[in-house]
Length: 261
Image (cartoon, rainbow, N blue to C red; front, side, top):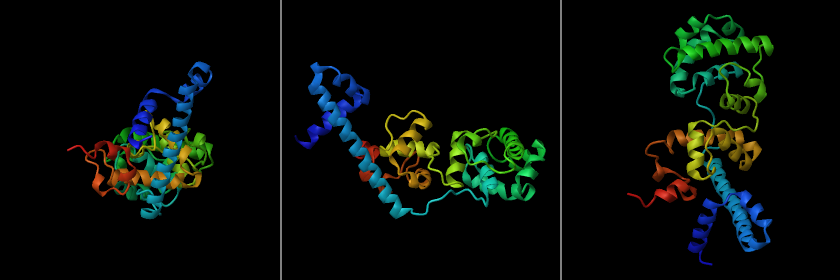
C-alpha cells in the first residue's frame, strides 16, 4: 500500500473511531474486517506516538540535559512560596519579589505569624496579591500546625494547603522530592498538544495522564522543565519560532502549517 494512501486511511479512522470501537467491532462477527483494520491502526498509533516521544526525549537530552525551574529558591519553603506567587505571574516578577519577602519571612514559622496585610505589602506587585497573601498565610499556618513545620511530600497532603492545587502540588513533588509527576501549566499544555505528545486532551489532568503514560518515570521531573522552557522561548503561544525549533520534523503543528503562507 502506498504511504500516502495509508496516511489518509489512518487519518480517517483516527478521527472517527476511539479505542473502544475496536472492542465493539470485535464482538460483532459481521465486522471482522473492520475490527482487524481498527486493531492494526490502534497498534500503529501507539507505535507512532512512542516513536515521537523517543525523538523528543532524544532531542532534549542533547540540547537541555540539565533543565530546571527559573524560580529562585534555596529550600522547600522558598519554592512553595515562589510557586504560589507564580500563578498567572511571570517567574521574572516573582524573582523580583522573593528576596525581600524571604528577608522578612525566612521560614514557615515567621510567615505563619505574619499579618495578611503585611504579606500583601511585600507581594502587591504580582497578580492577585490579595488572594495570594491569604493563601501564603494559610499555607504557612497549615504546614506549621498539621505537618510539624515541614512541607509535605505527598500530592494529597500538598493539596490540603491553601493556595495549592494539583499543578502546584506536582511542581513541589517533582522539583523537591523528585517524584514522577507532571505539572501541567499553559506551556506544557500547549507544547505537548502541538508536538502531538497528547491527543484531544481538553484539560490539564488529561494532558498529565497522557504524558506520564509515555515519558519514562525517571525522566518525568526533567520533562516538565523541558516542555515549559520550550514553550516559553521557542513554541510561544503567538508566533511560535518553528524555523528555530529542533523538533519541527516531529511536530504535528509544524506539519499542518509548514505550507501556509
